[in-house]
Figure 1 (cartoon, rainbow, N blue to C red):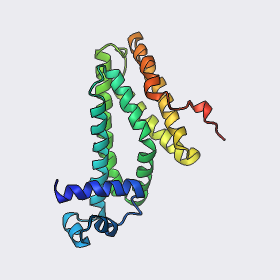
Figure 2 (cartoon, helix red, strand yellow):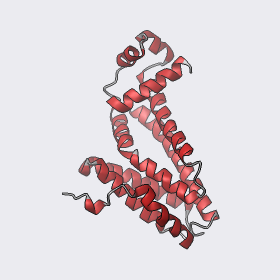
Figure 3 (cartoon, rainbow, N blue to C red):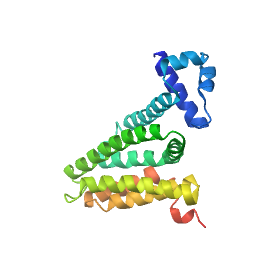
Length: 214
C-alpha cells in the first residue's frame, strides 16, 4: 500500500469517528507519525484529503455490500439487502452530509455528485433486472422509482435532523416506507420474495409505532 493510500484510509476513520471539523491536519500527521509538511506534499489541503477519505469510506462500504450479496441468488433480495445496509448507515451518512455542507461545501458538492450517480445506477440496474425476472410489474417506471427511493431517504434524513434526533426512528421510518413502496411494484412472485426476506433483514428493527413520539 502506498503512503498516500495509507493516509487516506487512516484519515477516513478519524473523520468518521471524531468528526470532520474536529480532525485537523496536525492531528492526522501526529497519529501517522509523519510531519505536517509531508502531509501537504501529498495533499494540497484538508479539502482534498477529506474528499478522498470520505470517497474511500463510501467505496469500502459498497465493496463490503457486494461481498455480502455474492451468495444471494435473486436480484430482488439483493436490492432489499442493499437498501437495508444503506438505511443502517444513514445516521452516519446524514451526520457527514450535514457537516460537509456546513463547513466544506465544495467537498460536499463533489461527493454528492459521485453518490447521486453511483446510487442511481445501482438502483436502476436492480429495477430493470427485477422487471426482467418477473419480480416487478412491466409497468414499473425505472426513473420514477429511482427518484422516489432517493428522495424518500433524503427526506427522512432531513426530518430526522429537524425533529427526531433518534437514529432508530430514522432507520425504522426508512425501512418501512421503502419496503412498502417496493412491495407495491411487485408481482405475486415478487411479493413472496419480499415477505420471505423481510424478517431476515428488518426483523430486528422496531416498527415506527412502537418507538413512540412527541
